[in-house]
Amino acid sequence: DAGVIQSPRHEVTEMGQEVTLRCKPISGHNSLFWYRQTMMRGLELLIYFNNNVPIDDSGMPEDRFSAKMPNASFSTLKIQPSEPRDSAVYFCASSPDRGTEAFFGQGTRLTVV
Amino acid sequence: GIQVEQSPPDLILQEGANSTLRCNFSDSVNNLQWFHQNPWGQLINLFYIPSGTKQNVRLSATTVATERYSLLYISSSQTTDSGVYFCAVGYNFNKFYFGSGTKLNVKP
Image 1 (cartoon, chains in turn red, brown):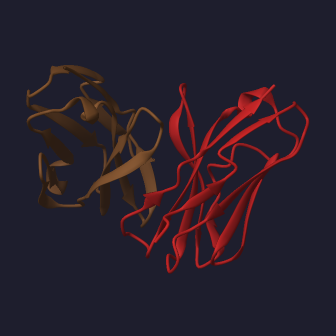
Image 2 (cartoon, rainbow over the protein chains, first blue to last red):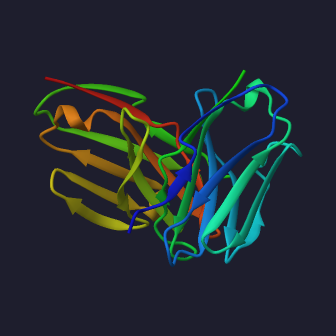
């Protein structure tokens, strides 16, 4: 299996623009997570889905962030409008089932200028 | 949420040395993983170990869930072991909380 695939790998955008990050989980996995990594806050869980349904979005920082999982093989994390403080590495992860081992994608490095 | 403390925060080893990294957590967990983040930022799975002991070549891990800690043991360290080691714990299935990591530098 190719593992969790994220795109783009790098994104540079101007403040105020909309940013969409994409994730393809490992085939057959039914849990998906979005994490954000910064120097100040480390790795934070933003939201997780089980069977395409958002289970916990309490980590989403504010209304500018939204996430969707329209089917079992695709998820998006959208930031609108983006701000410089959103600059971070965003990871997507998936796991076969609840309570099992999670596997991470290579991350998207977002820079908002 | 669960508090996860990792120690030491920084570690420098001479190639070939052994070391133990520790992860303490504040509450009962039913999920625990160790990751290595390499210098390119990739998070690599090392162990899925909610309890017990596992070994993989030069690495081994032990989790004592009742005492709320896990240990990662690195033997015969190599320069390629450099990076940041994270412990992530969870309860309520899949809601992982990450520690702040141990930054390891193995010198040749």
